Image (cartoon, rainbow, N blue to C red; front, side, top):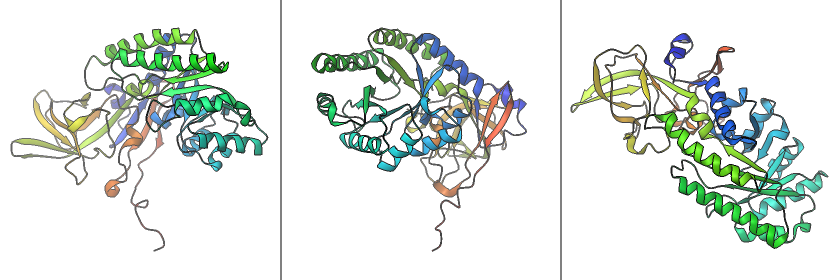
Length: 389
């Protein structure tokens, strides 16, 4: 979080707003890619679709998980060959749209997906590169037995060019042993398929789900520790299979700052409450349970004296507490609080429609072109209004 940048663009950095530092986004992607070496890097755009406006050159693929995300890719003119079209809910229309756009790879997460993709491809006289997603026991992907049934009778699907597998088991993995076991299990399954059916995977997509640090400084040092271990293990994996590594949160987290103003300050029962013009409808940190943990927070133009505060949002619910207890420079109404490391997910994960409050302004910043408003404040009241009743 660079408050000098925020100060330099304060004429447009009104609250509530998100500022995404494109230079930081590129820098983090380059750091990761340098650690990966020759392994291609895929950016999962669900982490932050606004960053598609300026993708780093070191990103080879983008993962798309819905028709809406595909539409965003079309709008931003993302080359179709870069797209890996994933997602658990694919219908015939969705698949046809993706195939007509010539997406590079499409994933199958169920036997139903296999049927839909196969039938649609044959209808369009196409044979798309397809990867089969392996489940680790949740709603995503297929059971091992389903994948084996497909591979064992692959001729049943003449519309598909099945090239490999996809595996992702979750996010914010802090323990190296969890990632190690994850990769071991995936590698063992691919080995088994090759030995039993003679199927050689030419594309393997894996999302390690490394933990991006939100609450405990030094943030970069902790991120670097898990990155170093994971990349070394991934390089060994890539010696056997043509691996693409998919990340979202870990690439994007550090590039985002959320700005909100102190709209009201009051003391009740010995607690200093700050009512902010944004809250849980905009800002969400993974793992922030009961608002007990403290993310990186800075105050613009801070005073030397400090106070203890409970930071709350503008929603009429007791759940709208951003941080329950934090020591900050003494605040006045109108002061701007800057929340760091919120470049991933929070911009789209918040319950933005609750109470029909305004959606934040979105600003992209780079030294190359300065600051650009890429989405202005949006009122949600029209979305929450019954039409033609």
